[in-house]
Amino acid sequence: MSISGALNLQPKLWSSLKHYSAERFREDIVAGIVVGIVALPLAIAFGIASGVSPTIGLITAIIGGFIVSMMGGCSVQIGGPTGAFIVIVYNIIAQFGLTGLALATAMAGIILLLMGFFRLGTVIKFIPYPVVVGFTAGIALTIFSTQVNDFLGLGLKDLPGEFIPKWGAILSNLSLIDLSTVAVAVVSLAIIIFTPKISKKLPGALIAIIIVTALTYILNMTMGFEVETIGKRFGDMPTDIPMPHGFDLNMATINMLLPAAFTIAVLGAIESLLSATVADGITGSRTNSNTELIGQGLANLIVPLFGGIPVTGAIARTMTNITNGGRTPVAGIVHALVLLLIFLFLMPLINYVPMACLAAVLMVVAYNMSGWRTVVGIFHAPKSDIWVLLTTFLLTVIFDLTIAIEIGLLLAIVLFLRRVMENSEIKAYSGQLDVHEGTDLPSQEVLNVAKGVSIYEIDGPFFFGIATKFDEMMRSTQHTMPIVRIIRMRKVAFVDATAIHNLELLITSSQKEGIHVVLSGVRDNVRESLEHAGIHNLIGEDHICDHITKAVRMANSIATNNK
Image 1 (cartoon, one colour):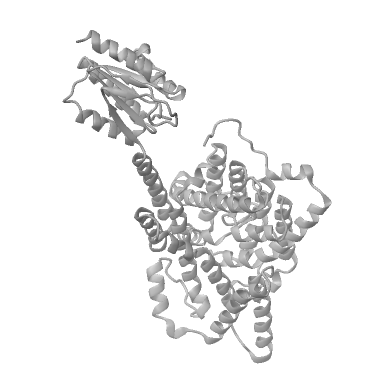
Image 2 (spheres, rainbow, N blue to C red):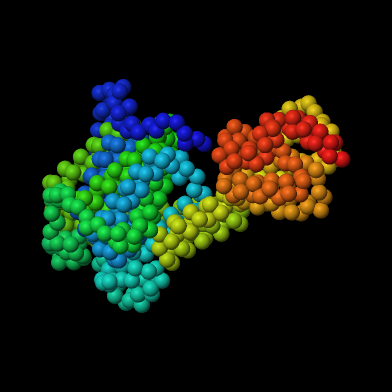
């Protein structure tokens, strides 16, 4: 993996339009219309579940979806509000209000922009799968928990945000279950589940909302059938895009919101790039990860100016786009325009949608997010992966997503370092050395190593973990005082500051004891790092050899002359 070279910031839309055709335009329009219809109930449901109005959910899908398609690095990505952000958005609003949410989202946008500019689009994909599965399953369970109140019609106000107290309140108030609400929820759930069995192209969530809303309206008019609707909870909703507004900035608020902003940025980056990776596997296209992060960053920087919530790539809507023929960002732009038309002309009808129907929609979303089959599959993996998954899952559910992502990333780093250390070796040689050992070359070239010469080979990157391991090995062999120590570094791809410091201490202590140190097989980039640290002045230019044969010849000569 390399992050060097020129940074290509060209949005995918530009290259897609170079060879655009009327046929492709027709396919993109059809896909965009379908995705727009599918996105409507999800945008409304995610907005309400996040603690904001349905209007805000739609505004986020319209503006965020447009910017992601216009400026992103994926041909088929559909951006908007997603279930992954429900928990964190709800918690931010509870602590800091809508103003705090807007500022945290804008800060996350800046972080995403920096990730793109510093070429971290590829790096973010290397977060271990158990971490991603763990907090995704945790988010799914949390979303499910937030919808039980509306699904059962308990009518509980000010439910605790924490998982355990929330379930305590729900279970202690089961006597308040409203059978009319449960009936609406169950019918909605059945429609969502069975619609794909009729046709996979039909959006089950939208079909459920249309049918159930019509039925409840008719029953209300004819029989006085009453259930809570969006209009009853939120009142009449505006149909105008709000004017952009700024933020009240002060360092105290920024410092408090920084962890939440970091969580939004990392979660958005992971979800968007995972969605793009899945899309690339199906379409054969290639996402520019860094440009995609920049597009996501711009969306999250601009959307809060209009009161919106965090934006990311939505896997379900992206897959809908692909299966309906969308292949360029034009489809995503059409999807945003469809939502805009619905927002301007059909919003009064949204008031009649039952809250229990939206609860059913989100419960199905939570089930699909949970990936329980994947979770079960990971339980057949190594124990370390299982513990990582369980830790991330429990932190997400019991505490919050901010802590889960921070600890998850820390676990990812620890696991990576552990696996690198397990696969890195330090070998010691004396007497004879096969030059081609550890290579695919069939021939042998055995070097005779003079008495008093010890050879240590570092097999793998020389960073702080291996540096400590190497230092311990040196200490354990101090009883056999050699005349020359050769450190073979042909397989060292990079060194860090700790390794250089330990190497400097080894050279200094060896020289005090009259022991020569010779470096062998040093790569150009490693040699450059050593020279910057002044190692070549400490050890002598002639003691840094490009091949083991030269190093052994020099060491044998020194050992012979010092007998």
